[in-house]
Image (cartoon, rainbow over all chains, first blue to last red; front, side, top):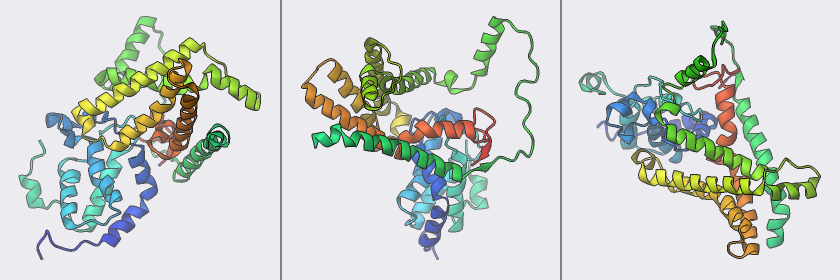
Length: 132
Length: 221
């Protein structure tokens, strides 16, 4: 079956989201969208301060959207998220939130959700890809 | 309707505010557990050396290196002043304290009206500054939604109406009703929206022993 059209087990995703809802939804709702986390991310700095690499942007566009859609997503959506949580973040844990929102745990959780559906970068992809 | 806004709704809003914060805080604490130190933290100040004031001040500035105070000093000064004014203005306003004295017989100390008037003005300038930042700065615009502007509006409304009422701009009675209503909306919204960072900033930064903590933290989240 084509990689793009493989079905997605939305129930599993919804279950996973529900399991960490109390904590993750809190983090998401307490993010005040101040963007002060931006400069703590070396990828943001290395990409000419492209907002797409801001830690807050990454969690809002990945986990935030997953929660907004309550897990009812298709494979295309997960492939989109894959780019954010793997290519735009290396989980170095150096991002800093003035409020105290823990960004790496949210990105790691979004990765787990993608991985549960077989969405992750393969080794070939990893070899040709450059983060910087 | 006006009677409701001027009377019971004030108490209902206050009750929702207090109970909401208690509920949210309790639920948060319920999800944490006492921190077990695998490696006990090093003592924070092992040796106190004799230092002059100049050295102490220099070390204070040196400790800011790499923090937001160095990378974004304008925002940090702006946001600190803004937040102090947001909290201090309603608490130490003479009019509020007189009403509190009448209602329950106790009140906080009041600042001179000219000072609180200035503080309210600083809050309003702060709101314009943050709204401008959302509109003009690329990285903030990228994550800004209508909800962010709505929250800024909810915060600004009681201060704007209070300022207008104090200076008797527009119809006083209408402005006072709007002031009460907007204050009630703010109190109700506080525990359940992103404004809850009023409480969670302290919980995250002082209680949780993670890398974001200002202190060692005593709990694991």
